[in-house]
Image 1 (cartoon, helix red, strand yellow):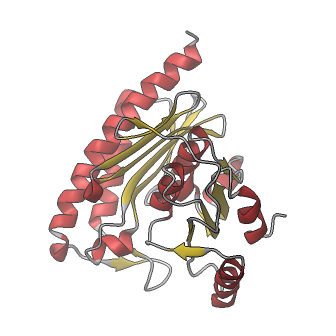
Image 2 (cartoon, helix red, strand yellow; image 1 turned 90 degrees about the horizontal axis):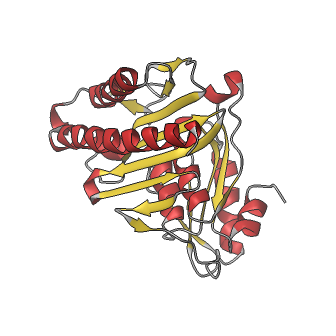
Amino acid sequence: MTSQDTGLDTRFTLATAIAREAGAMALDYFNRRDSLVIETKRDLQDVVSIADRNVETLIREKVEAALPGDGFLGEEFGHTAGTSGYTWVVDPIDGTAPFVNGMPNWCVSIAVLHDGVPVIGVIDAPCHGEVYAAATGRGAELNGRRLSLDPSRTIRNGMTGLGANSYVTPEAVADIVSRLLHEGGTFMRNGSGALMLAYVAAGRLVGYYEPYMHAWDCLAGYCLVTEAGGWHLPFPTEGEKLTRGSPVVAAGPGARIDLEKLAGLA
């Protein structure tokens, strides 16, 4: 076993344990959400609470204590460079809007990059009792059950996940929906891009497209999709690009061509 394999195994074990602990903390906040003070960021739909900040702080502190040379990027507190070649990319609560409104469609998303490539992805969805976990070359699992995508599933016999936010014009969103429906597809949006990417890995959705998304929302899901046998559009992780938004596209093998067309890539 190489030192890189050992480093990956160590971080995969740690990421899975931290995701479960962070998920339990987030669920406790969710169960007493009426007491939370809700703030807005970019607009009235972009919300945050002390739950987001404290869950991210928990994850950061656990990583720093165990692996002080690793870098860390979190949605709430930004980027800290590391020296090990590994960087943790975290959304403490992806789907804060569903979270504060009492809906279960949120998750804790933890990715680990090695030299810019997502090599670990763990997504904990506490309200559903589900933990999605993947590491490069080790496959993807949901609660310990191996995930493997069915190539017969397409946009015409399955559901496609779509995401949107204020970075994207209403007209662009309407066009995406229109083109998908004209191709015989149907869609869903549950408020958490990370969770919908996990659903692609699990075969519940045949693909996912969001024109503008951040690294902390997608990189864990990307690792899951890859290890389940799917495809995703590369996300730019070089330098400052890691902290900026980019289009996100992922698909099972039977839906890739249609998702590439939907995203204007083909």
